[in-house]
Image (tube, rainbow, N blue to C red):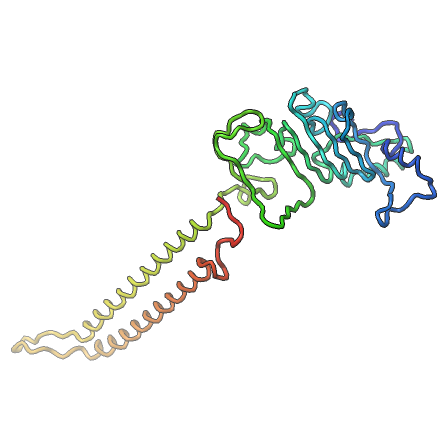
Length: 329
């Protein structure tokens, strides 16, 4: 396999060298099954240490596929990353648990198939390693972890080196006994590479590592106080419309009343004629039913609007649209 592959084979024992060393020091009759957090011998990939990682002190390799590696930026093989190309100011600390994830079981399988001299050698694998905290002085963090650009990183900036900390696992929880702040610094700040920040960058929350398409396009987060103001203003306008409809109903009722009792003057000595009996009867009935129905609907609408306000726009409401604890800007 190529040097950029996360793993390759060699004619060496199947367990890592440190595991082999520990195993040789243990009486086989004393080997334990891991219960009660006793020792447990299991398949562990052999990590390929580079010169910058194997010199000095600080690198830690635990018994059960756990590593802390102090070196330079490299997302995979020897020639990858800013460490691989020889850049200075590219120090990195890579904390990894579970190199190759579930694929580590291939060690035992391949060892069984190919014999005891098969050995699995691995480079860092940002794709397959189970859990990682990667701290780098100079890196292409989005490119290395294959993250979409979002609104924070445009395609032109996608491979712009920066200092970065990346955390990756199946599940991540941030837990605070008090509060949590996610803060970006403002315009004019100088970053770790000496560049000046020309604008304020925000925070992208991206599901599915996708930022385009019908269901995944990024949209601005609504600011709750502004939304409350907007909806309150809309509610006021609807309530004013309620009053306009009520005034219209009263005017229509007055007009209907006048029509129902309408009469003309007779050509004989100008005497008033009698009102149309059918019009007067029907008009009065319709007028009363129409006006009463409109009045009931208007009152019901007023109560609905008041309930809507208190439920959604008041902080004491059961469906208050703002979070009582979380804030964004």
